[in-house]
Image (cartoon, rainbow, N blue to C red; front, side, top):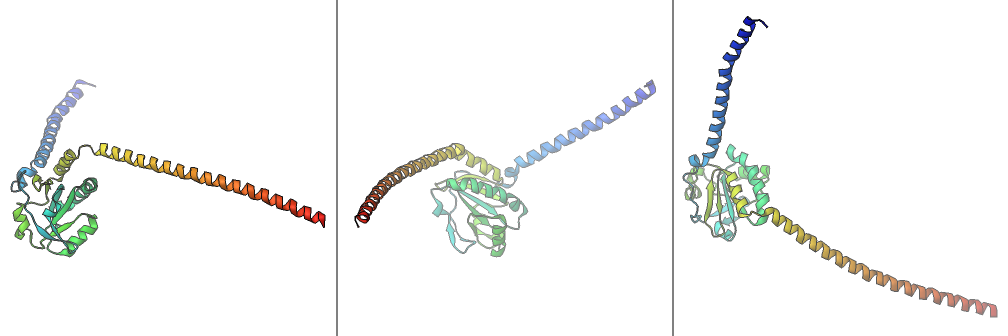
Length: 252
């Protein structure tokens, strides 16, 4: 490589370097901005929600299947209230996460309740079927901002989610369902240990059942032995009868 070619190559590299560095800086800035925006969702949209420690307002609302549900009926249990609507894209994106949480913590006693801002029952029922929502859904069947419950709970953004403790007090209010999941994981910290313990209990029950089966089997064997003995006696009696018969034949 001659000097002219070398200088030309160096010039190209020097010209390209600032552009590459600038692009990297832009990408880092964008990533930081995105992360900050995500972290600040509550700072932006959850400012009107009830604060932790507040007594959750009671409500008595119609369910999607035509019944009624009162929040105070659920005292003694942790409750997750998910405020949403089938027409809300962010809510629909969040529903699979909510379903997974319900499948994980529902069996541990947490009651999930969807509070829908749908005006038409058929729209809610379709979403319930589409997303396989197996927990109760309640609604006032009115426009979101005109509902009593949205005012009582300070709902200015959906989805919004509340975690309520067994005494009916707010533990957490947020527009980010992953925070609810993190809180539930802290409340039920030993899920794996509990599962392990349950498995051990099941194992013990199975072992007890096995022992009972063995005992039953032993009894059956004993009955079988007795039956065999009876059978042997019957055969012996049969043989004696045959001998007696043969003797009688010989006599005649």
